[in-house]
Image: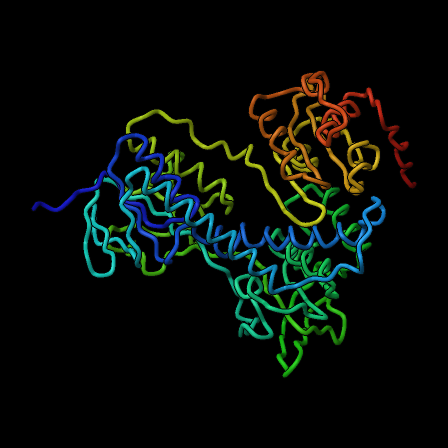
Length: 470
């Protein structure tokens, strides 16, 4: 029998790869999907998005239980955390979702192989010693945790997020290095679990990619909960003892130590052993360069997700996977518009944004109007007992086009989708505030922030501007 030549071979079964495989099958293409792990779903499902959010939900439920009596719900005793059951629920959830992905691929008649895959020349993919041919190849091998040399990761005292997701206990003292999304999510989880948490960040503020005002609000809320922050610091030495870890460095207090040290400083692309040299594909700054259709410089080879120089987010990888497939199939897809990619941090309270921050809008030459609305002034937030945080809207001053929306508060990661659609459609403040929102809902906060930006605040009287000192 002649060897099967697939229309497209996809290396990596994460949210970029498996979504691309499903879309390719929908278009009538023959698809080979190769995943190194025993189950599909990639880092997002097994070591990132889903298990982390499962623990975040446990932490949120625990916090709600502590406040239950305020709502008239009487418990027989103080709520307690069973870490074993929390981890079991997390694993059950991950397993069920992985089986769901497997079923989707089977239904779409995608050929799935398990094993290490690499390029073996143009149109050739080697999987565990066997070569398969394909007219097109999509590289979607994702990323892994990045660990600077100063951190002696041992999985016992010095952990990465992979280790932390399986950690069976609640450390009395936890130091988190990195105040990005991953670091802040784990700081949120363990501060609610009862750990004394300290966060160390090299940059001047937490969540440094968010609007400066939002970062300050998040830090204020976390500090109120008892989390300690050291920003603008550089760790120079890590000493691991029998039962503790000691940190030294620029900007750190003397004697900073903890039971556990979590390193959450970023991720690096999985390019080792991928066989890029067999097709003459070179990296730029450790990423695979692509054009706006996700094509590499080698004809017939595409790359998506954490491999390429775009935001390392699961929803970005999925969008890029669909784009790559539709392009190689001969359609005329719209490139991904990275201006309107939402960011989301699932700490408690949640943080989300889309578009330009106030500083970025000004730096881009815009004269801006800014509106803010605190969740404390919102009826639904009061009903929920979750009144911390705010919505901030940044708009162009002359025509009122909304340039950015930034949120910290309950369900911010859900609310931001309205803003994504608004910015994609070039909505103005007028369209925002004239879109009638149901009452009482959290989404009213976006409408109210637009009202303030337009100079017509309804349910909140903004404080007078601070006088500038001479």
